[in-house]
Every structure is written in structure tokens, then in C-alpha cells.
Image 1 (tube, protein in one colour):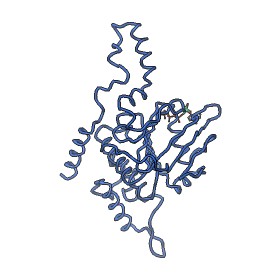
Image 2 (tube, rainbow, N blue to C red):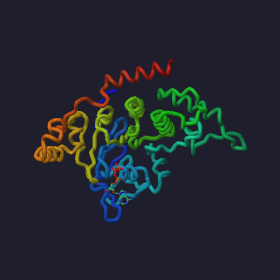
Image 3 (spheres, helix red, strand yellow):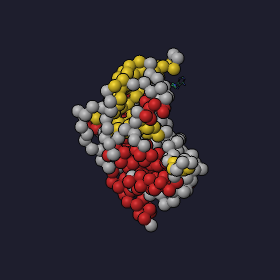
Image 4 (cartoon, helix red, strand yellow):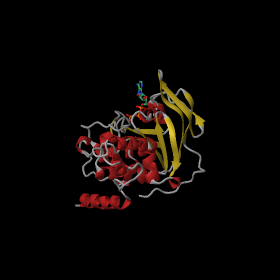
Length: 303
Ligand SMILES: Nc1ncnc2c1ncn2[C@@H]1O[C@H](COP(=O)(O)OP(=O)(O)OP(=O)(O)O)[C@@H](O)[C@H]1O
């Protein structure tokens, strides 16, 4: 599960050079530069209002940037629509997922890309089921009944289907919009595992998250956005989890706050030392815990 060291001399598949975007007078992004490489997980972290959704919308073809340049394979591009972004190999897996809850697993897998056969162009159900089964198996996703509506699956399984689908339909860059935000520890571990599989399948993965622990488990490269600007851009070997957590929490501001609170009423306010910025008691998931959870999952699936 540990993140591998990747070739940083490789040309980025997707490049943002000083990209900016404004909603009227609101500068949602300013001078944002990010390099996304294939076979790497680029984690984009940021608090509310940092500009994460705006960034996703630009890459996914929902917004056109107003400054700077976005390049795909070194060539400047502007996606006129989400379809154009998809055609360029960009897949976006949104938090609320573009899956139809009442439709079966295989139907969702091919939604919008149905296979047809014969002169009447009827749905080739047998082939779609077979391919869906093969692709999910390749990713290690065990879903015993592909006719089951996806609404009955766990949030983690649904995320995995969306990731497998993006890989099958030729994505080179996959953007995951807070895929673990609504999940518990166990389901998060399942999704983190598929993030690594997508990376190992050679995709450039952009993992948007609030959670430095999840990011650090799978990330090769970390970018923190704050009020629309990049405040940190570092590779894994240049950053510890504690530093990432501290940067994410706004270390300086937390220190100032803890000093301020300590002067107010030390008897009633939690001692600042208890919430010392950057101090991590224990990660939400460490690799050993994750391995144990995975074993448990496998045992459950084979039971
Ligand atoms: N449609 C809009 N019109 C005007 N301002 C907007 C609009 N959407 C976002 N903003 C502003 O742009 C900035 C960045 O917002 P964005 O939604 O991209 O941040 P975010 O990091 O995704 O936040 P969150 O985690 O809360 O979703 C914020 O100041 C936000 O208020």
C-alpha cells in the first residue's frame, strides 16, 4: 500500500500553469500550478472555500479558466464541455457519483456507453455483463450479483465501480472528488486500495481530500490550496505526515489561536498542549491497520 517513488523527470500528462478563475469579483483560484504525472497520486488538500471544486470543474470541462494555461501532454487545452474532457482522457468521479441507484451494476458500468449488437442495435447484455465482471475482477472488486441495483451496495463499492469504469473507458487522468469523505474507516480503506490500483494501472490520479491521513497513505505528491492559492507543493520524500497535517491545519494560525485561548481562561479551555498543531496521536489508518482491515474484508468476501 505504501506509495512508490515515481519518475519525476517524466513529462506531466496534465499541467496547470498559473491558472486562475474568478466568479465575478470572487477570485476562486489564483496562480495555481500543478503537475500531474501518470503512475502517481497527486493529492489536492484544502479547507472549505480553498478552491478544490473550482479546480475540479476546470479540469473536468465545466469551467473555462480565466488566466494561465492548462496543458494536456504539453499542449494547451480548454475543454468546452465534460464530454470534451472525457475525450481527452480525463475522468471525474464525483462524491455523489454519477451512478443510477436503481440500475444494476453492469448497467451502471456501461451507462452512456452501452454495447449494442445486430441490425436492430439491441443491447448486448451478455457481453456487457461479461466485461463488467472481468473488469471488476481485475480490480479485485467482489460483487456476487451484477444484476443487483447499485443503490444496495456500500459507498465504498460504488466508488470502486466508478473507478473501474473510468479505467476501462480509457481514462489517463482520474479526479476523485473527496471519495472517502462520507465513508467510515473500513470503507475508506477499500477505496484507498483502489486509488493505489488506479495509480498502478498507470493513471494520473488526482485525489481531492480534506484528510491528510488518507492523503499520506496513498499520495506521491501533495498540494495544499488555501483561499485559491497553492500554499504547499511537495513530494512525499520531502514531507512527513506531521508536516502535512500541520500545514493543512494552518499551523501558524493554530499556534496563535492556542496562545490567545490560553490567555482567556486556562481553567475552562482545553490546554493548548493537547491540541498542539502538527502533533498526530495516531493516523486514522496506518499501513498495518489497513492491511488488517483488508484481510478482514477478504475473509468476509470469501466466507
Ligand atoms: N458559483 C459561485 N459563485 C460565486 N462564488 C463562488 C461560486 N462557487 C464557489 N465560489 C467561491 O469560490 C471560492 C472557492 O470555492 P470552491 O467551492 O471551489 O472551494 P472548495 O475548496 O471546493 O470548498 P468546499 O470544500 O467547501 O466545497 C469560495 O470563496 C466560494 O465562495
